[in-house]
Image 1 (spheres, rainbow, N blue to C red):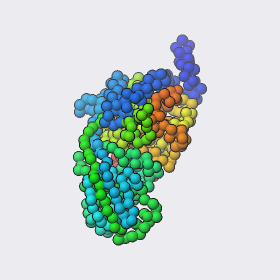
Image 2: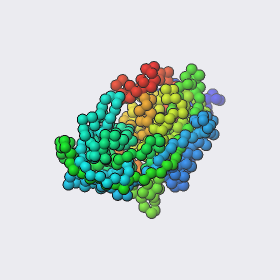
Image 3: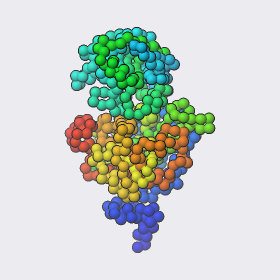
Image 4: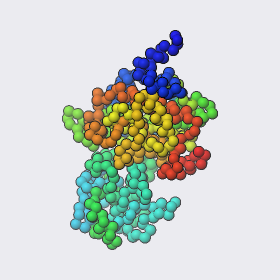
Length: 509
């Protein structure tokens, strides 16, 4: 009894005894059962402090956060993720983009001004006149033979298209269109291209996101050669445009985008798994550590008294849970190897995670699961949320971890928000890697969420530290159970990412 008593006292003091009694195969001496809310709270008060000024990608505050995360991983004994320079960093080359100072599109008797019902997000200075024609999705895919310009003459014309890609109007598809549609339209001879705004979130928020200063990955490709953007049309006007095969007379003027190059960094480390038979299989655990900055950068209300968008919930919360898991695994490693990756640029379009997925530092075919932690906030501290539940075969491990700490699981909340496609997990899913997003307890996007989501009110002192601790405990235990499974996670039959997953793993799953 001498050796058992400290464990009993620990379980009683942490409130975990009743749960562990029903989880006989979960070891109650694991490090996650000893998390300290004061330690986690200290990390919260630093990462979401005014000193870091909203951690905007490329800012000094963002770089300080990156150095802090790297220092933690080094202290935990993780190997540097970047073998080329033996560092904990992956440089993400970025291009800073400033919107045009003035721009206008005229279609028939209608006028759309940049910053009003129209946004130009790419392209040079322009002053052109020509017919305005509808071009379906404005998409060309040689692999499938899809070509919306094949039987459509758009030379010297302004093109209007549906948003996203054929069969996919999710966020990832929208951003793929942003990066590629202008070149497709220009190749067909168009002088400008605009997508119809039809996304499930407010136009004002979208303007705040893409209408101000922003960044994109500098992929070495030239900037768009024609203006590209979005217009918020009335439904009747769109119907008229689609019905008019000859198009409508139009004009397009723009002072053009202004661009400059800069950089930011992903931060990561690697922990070798404890089981040599599966240690060459890696689970990548991710969280974004950037937020939206200060003042007008934040895209929301601010005042002279408070202009810093501290990002306590989004995503100091997730970053702290990522570091908590890293610390616990350093003490007691799971069977499979772990990649801890804190990514930059999520708020600017999933830039850091997409760059890593395109330029992996561990081969993607050896990366068997992505466990992302990120959220807009919480309105239910009795639960955690899982966006992607039911898709990769790991529901049992999530539920067992939550039950071990007396919490329930909210499966795929607020489906109308398209949350799976709005966080870094989708960058890995798009490559075929089974992925999901672990988030704080949220039933829907209500006033309790919007009070803090991307607001200057999202400060450390508003955080429930007891809930932060329990969230970190559940995330860590769930990750451990997933990494220890005999069977690898994979997409459920019929999932949209099943085929690309089979291709990635060469049908080996």
